[in-house]
Image (tube, rainbow, N blue to C red; front, side):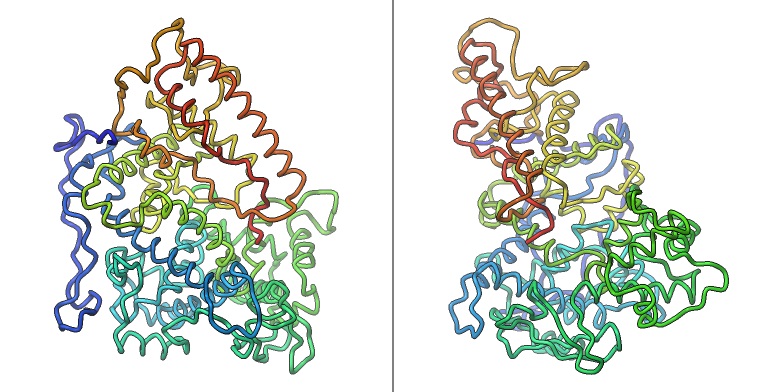
Amino acid sequence: MAAPPPSYTTAPTNAPAYSETPAPVASAADALPGYDGSGAAPSLFVASPGIDDKLPNHFKINNNYAKAQVMPSDLQAHLVLLGAFHRLREGIRTFKGNADVPMQPDERWAVFLQRAVYRFEQWAVRMIGGEGQEEVLGEGPKVLTPNEIPPLDVLMVWHTYMLNPRTYYEDCLRKLPGLLRVGSLPLMQLAGTIDHETLLPHPPSEARSSAFNSFTNQPFQYSLNTTSDETVPIYCPNCSQPNTIPWITYRGDGFAQRGFMCVCNSCRFTFNRETLGVRKFYEDMEKCIVNPDRFFMANTVVDYQAGVPADVQWSQVLTATVLSLREGTVPAPAEIWGKQIGWTMKAVEDYCRIGLLGKKNQPWIATPRPLNIILSAYRQPGPFSIDLASAILRQMNFVEKMVNMGFTEQARWEDDHDTLTRCVVRYHHFLDLMASTPGYFAVPTLDIDLAWHTHQLLCKSYRELKDIIGIVPDHDDKVGQGALSDAYDKTAEAWKVRFGVPYSICGCLPPDVASNSGGASFSLFSKKGKSKSTLEKSIENPRPDLLSHSDDSADQTHPSDHYAVAIVNPGEQNAAQAQTRRQEITKRTKELGKSVEKGKADQWGEIMQKRAKDHTPSFLCPVQYGVR
């Protein structure tokens, strides 16, 4: 049995008192329609009774007391969605129907994601409200009506988008005012659309299905299979005329395929996804010239470090500098800029480098990081500053781990309230750790990452972290494995020093003593001589709220390494980093084994030595990031 976290019934004696109004409860008018055919009043997701009862009222973060930022019931609702996403993926990958273009399971899933991203764009822009609709939308928060709840594939894209909090906030401010008004993902409302036992969506009402179709011109029910006669309208970047393009072709150049290429029916211009991204750049450029006080280039509105809106003057200056704008610069259509500058991202980069580096493009000087950040938003078409299909591929690695640990099985949480409570408690300590080590990249474990993801979906609360820890942390899922493994070691070391217990006891060994330089030692070795194994004694756990020594809980503290997608023939640098990591783990294993044999290991060291035998350490798979 896992050691339960301590039960908190009152706030700490030295914590401030909070006089808060209860969270608003959705009315029947805002809830989803019933699905049992009885005509009963609709209901939201109902979490397991008492699942929030053991959570502390306050947490000490950054030397101040703060209320809980996320609740175990939020995690439970989130896990319903993750289970539904996983079932959706498996349904696509194992499709057995007729397909006129043969595809492997992963290829079929990748094509499905491209279509899901397109459907999400239509929903977000046409149904919820896109750029230029600010006056119609009005001000103030918006509650999704039952008929505005999107299908599961669209919801999956929205969910992943929000797990990139800085980019999502920036794009909402610039392009998606409707989503900005919606604010947080309505977890309880959305989880209520899923059957908790089958993890399949409830059938939509006729009104909901009709509303989605009329606004988006897309069927509510997504297709499990894509055929070559299904098309999408794409406008030529050179002449702005529409082209009807198949999603897939035998040649592999359909819009949902990696080799996408099209010759415009009107002007015979050849374009691909890169060209469409360049067109997006030129369109934004024209807006910035026409109205520099209102429009700015991508990734200039939200401060890249702090995660909050930057000063408007800074956005104006950075935009003007990158675009080489001067007083009297004449606006021009995107087609003209394309002919003058070029239709490749390399041509755009060279043009912008002149604005930042001077009148001449000096190729021996590396492209400044702010420019790379801006240009990254224009490497794919659409209003989104990231490749959402690739982001979902990376995110599904995390979902798979949740499924494998049994977290998406809702019956589990009827009796087990301790696990999700511990996830939330560890997350708040993780926030405190980030606040105590500004400028360092902290790597979460799986249980912490679940709570972190859930908090990011609660946008308003998450953005208020600026007042608690000084920044709104971004959640970068494209970090190189070398940096990731080093950062994880430093996170584990800092956690042990700050909280007195190991960060993880899944079997991934922490940094060895020899690698520590000064300060407190993160050692699993005691200074005692040979003695009776601590595993034969009762485990003394000073922080059961932060760590359980139960074998059933071990995998929950495994490093969250869903940041990468493995590919064949990885780069030499990544392969070398993986080999270095493998050698380091081997060294740690030998040192710990010797210490256990001599009776010098503490109780945590013996537990980890036992678990390391059949455990696969993280960060050993040589990968390239952001590539399918």
